[in-house]
Structures are given as C-alpha cells and as structure tokens.
Length: 165
Image (cartoon, rainbow, N blue to C red; front, side, top):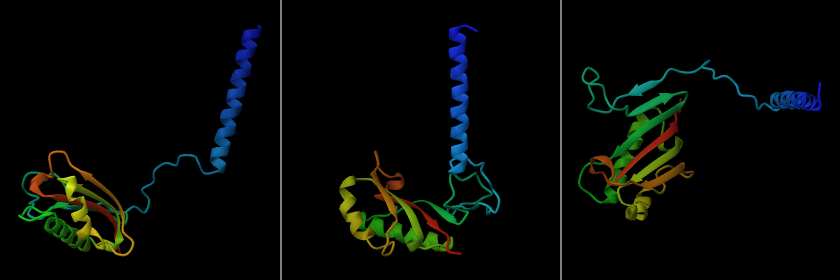
C-alpha cells in the first residue's frame, strides 16, 4: 500500500468513526428523525362553504377543516357596502360563528392571517380587531394584497384554532 492509499484509507476510517459518533449522539439527545405516526390520529372533518351542494361540481375549498384537535378556517370576507371598520367587524363575526360551529372560540385561536385590500386601512382595521380574541391575542400576520382581496372585500381573515372538546 503506497502513501496515497494509506491516506485515503485513514480518511475513510476517520469519516466512519465521526459518522457513527454523530449518529450515536443524535440518538442520545433525541435528534434522530422519527417516522410519522398516525396512531391515535382523528379523522379529518371537512365542512363545505354555506350554499355549496356536494352533488354539484366539486367545490374549490372547504370553509373549515378539523383534524387532531385543531380547526383551520378558510378566509372570510365581507362582500357588501361599507368601510374597513364595517368589513372587519362583519368578517370577525363570521369567523366567530364558524369557530363556534367547529367547537372552538375566538379565545382559542392560535394563528390569524389578515389580508387587506389597502395597507392604509391598517390602523382602522386594528381599532375593530383589538380585543376580539380575548386578553391574550393569537399570533398574527397582516399583509396588503396586490390587486385587492377577492370578492371586493376590504379585508379577508383566516385562522387556526384549538377545538375545545
């Protein structure tokens, strides 16, 4: 065995030792990747938007999906006349109603996404939004949408909440 072969063999042994040690440490500290498990997983429950007829053409989305103790609500908008405060109030009422149907509440919301047709409405939207999710509000992301919110709503809001069973 010449010098180059010995050097490559030594590198191979060192790499193997480090890989084994790293795998052992990962296992000791719980870093190893676990296989996904569906044990104890509850079935997924999907609710169609109001006015949808399951016998007709397939709907584009579900209004809510409940799975493993969480409810995911599709975005709600308000499609009537009114300013941002009126739109925000109506959207939050619709969210609350949908949450209650799913066995949850505004206080159990974990994450909210707010989509504004115009970022200039941010402060007025916040005036109506403040306090609607209880003393400890959820995590929130707010963005202004390019081209507006679908359906001429000034605001659309979706959320994820814990089901209160």
